[in-house]
Length: 247
Image 1 (cartoon, rainbow, N blue to C red):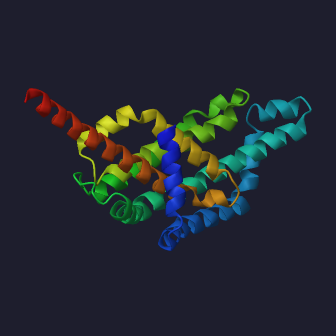
Image 2 (cartoon, one colour; image 1 turned 90 degrees about the horizontal axis):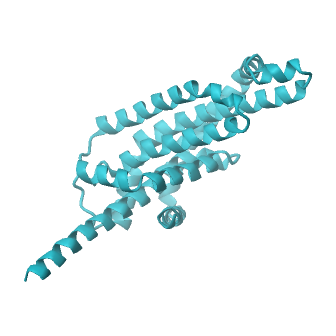
Image 3 (cartoon, rainbow, N blue to C red; image 1 turned 90 degrees about the vertical axis):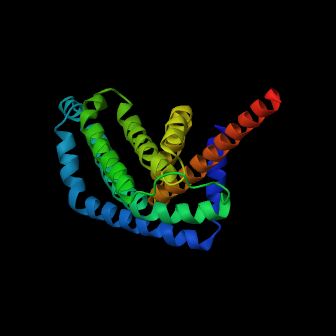
């Protein structure tokens, strides 16, 4: 948890640089447009559709019409929010993250060598495949909404998973080798998911949530580059210790 908190603190510190805000507003504006558009043209359709699905249909049949409508509206809002977040996430991952990475890496991690592959194709495919799996996961787990409370947890889980799957890879692609990436993914799997969950919660805050995808990109840049720097220093320390011992 300490590393997650450190990444979030450094993210807030980076927001003090005026140039970063220019990059923040692009995905935020797009998310707002998608959010408003879906709200105006799709919310009623989604609510009507959710009312015909259990448990909302059961509640309506039992006479608790108001409760069924409440759950239907909540489901419609969560789906619209997920669609808006997914759209702005793709923009942040494909176009904004590389610019943020260059800025943060040069100013905060200047001694960290770039030993990875700067592949636009690989990063783009990673983002698109993550988005497709996100949509598939949403659809497959819809029946779990029948379990009380699960419908509130699942959107957060899938957003957290999407953040980790997308931004953790893209933030490290330029700096880490394939072996380093596999090691970091294995050793930091849980903290990376916790970081994604934290930003998923931010995404549900009105208006502030519009900045969540770019904030997630920035937070993952700080977390992964710091983790890579520590890992490389640790590897250097092991080599020095072994050399000293053999002498």
